[in-house]
Image 1 (cartoon, rainbow, N blue to C red):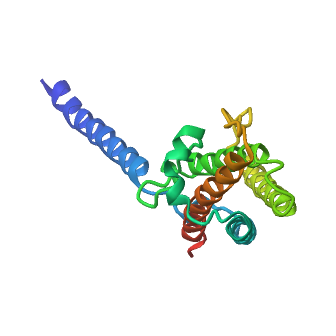
Image 2: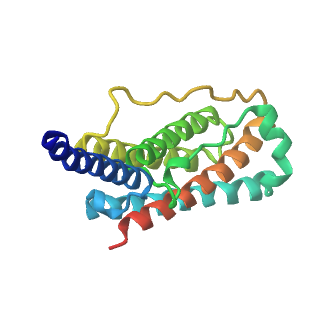
Length: 204
């Protein structure tokens, strides 16, 4: 009778340890991952600088589209967005309530890669916009490369980089210019979210 009595506290301790470990794992899964993941400050500062530069490029593109082609209001082109098949880029893994660092960096990189494809599809949009579009693509490529290198440094990078997926085909000058307005508007929203995430990660 003594043996079962001796085993009982051991079983209880084992059960308590199992429940504690399970609870800890649940908390870890549910807790937003913040700056504790050791993202280098130099990386975060460079990302913030790159986002602001891209935002300035996008504003320049929007201003030129408005001044040159009188396309100033993306909300007026919402039906065209659907018919052209211009996608929205998800950043669900980057929400401050449920930030998952690996997935968030992956979504940021994948989103930038998608915008590269969208901007390439706008090639030839107009002579006035050519230099602005080229600069925007270059800055997005630099930002995407920076994120990918950081993912590799942290051992987070997947074996294969994301593909751009389906990119819309613009069949007329108007579609290309309207597409430019819609892509610029979507990219601005994406960058605002990215900026919010990077500021959150940069908090002490």
